[in-house]
Length: 102
Image 1 (cartoon, rainbow, N blue to C red):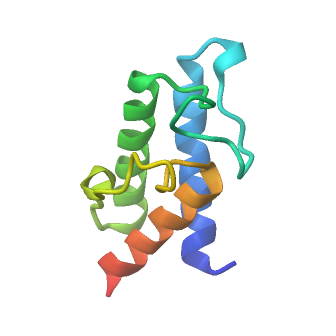
Image 2 (cartoon, rainbow, N blue to C red):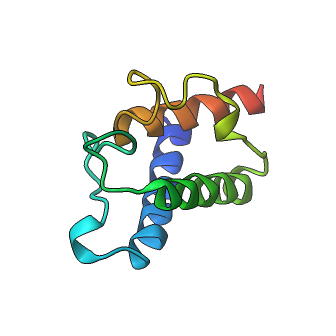
């Protein structure tokens, strides 16, 4: 795992911790790469998802000094999009950071 991917994983996990504080214990996200973030099997409602995306954007900007806009991706909410699982989302965010640094 390269440094960007590892740091993004940490920032996403910190964001999950923040979002989980506002969720019922039964609806809290796990830090499992297979955890769905969107769709019928997701633990998040629409507000929880928005809060997670905003928290990740803020933490990434603070951590890397580069803003990213996750919701700019037209495939975000597709069934095969980056929200289909936590692991895919982390890879997606890491790719965004790499592109913003180049």
